[in-house]
Image 1 (cartoon, helix red, strand yellow):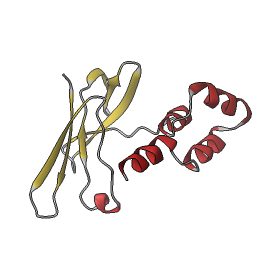
Image 2 (cartoon, one colour):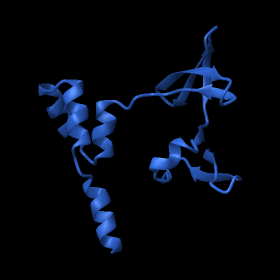
Image 3 (cartoon, one colour):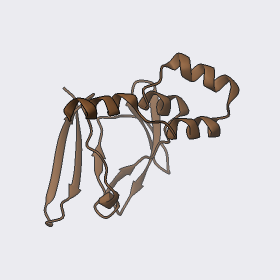
Image 4 (cartoon, helix red, strand yellow):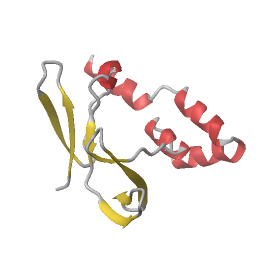
Length: 129
């Protein structure tokens, strides 16, 4: 089984590492995570190399460009979520997204997705109360 490893320096000065299965639940980021940034290691496949960096496939059909970072001693890739992915994270169906996409710009779609309350999360919290 593939794994995702999330590592960070702990407040006590040691290392903390969380091992997650692919498709598992990731931990919540907190406001102080910028002080102790998480390093996320994903199983990847190098598609091609260039003088400036590498192209890696992070999962089937999704390839990102990564540059070498001396500070992090690793290749670093940042990918912005698509509006469709944002809607999915909020629990909306692709059919609903496509109707919204027909009449809105990407900028407006990001705002709409960000202004929502995720019903699935509220339901899960309520069930645990």
